[in-house]
Length: 238
Image 1 (tube, rainbow, N blue to C red):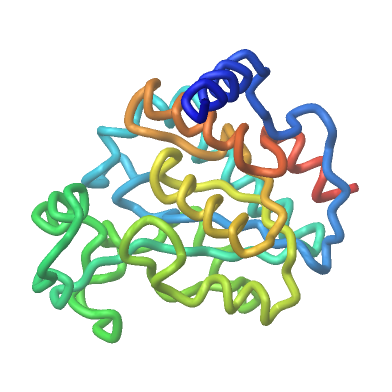
Image 2 (tube, one colour):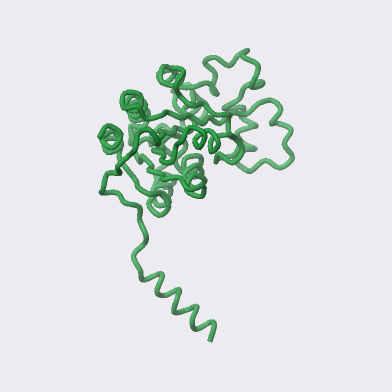
């Protein structure tokens, strides 16, 4: 009997249309309580000399994410929306981890997103772990939230959630790198912690079309909304 009921339930779920985030209605944003969050806006992802740039190059060109992220940052500054930045950085001490994940092991081996130590400025300026140069004026204006680096993919290992809550933020407009990893993980963590989350689908990029499409599928099923850059700009300026 139990097996029969399970079969009926499974068939019903498969027949039902997949739940999707709202992609048509612009959200009404309370600017005082909204943050634009950009994950990993760093040279190794975005600079043509970056160690991971070749993996993202094609999708970056398709989404125009580099220019779109700057548009979002510029809009946030003009409209009074808080800019928050959450980088991914590895240090020499991280090479001693006992159980790094598969991708982490590769990144640590390649020494991408790497600096000697968080308190050691030597060799950091312009490195792969440093912020992408065109964004620095927005990030270092004294008004942005720049949190401690995350180490996996989501913000569970840093102070992002605390900082957002401490600044009265309850809604996040989300973009950055990489679409199917850090952006996806941040979306999930923020949703789990009760934030409203709107992902900007052309302000992200992934290593290939399949990875990008997988990310979009997850955004549509989990986030409160999926926006284009033009829609996010409109929502932040209304």
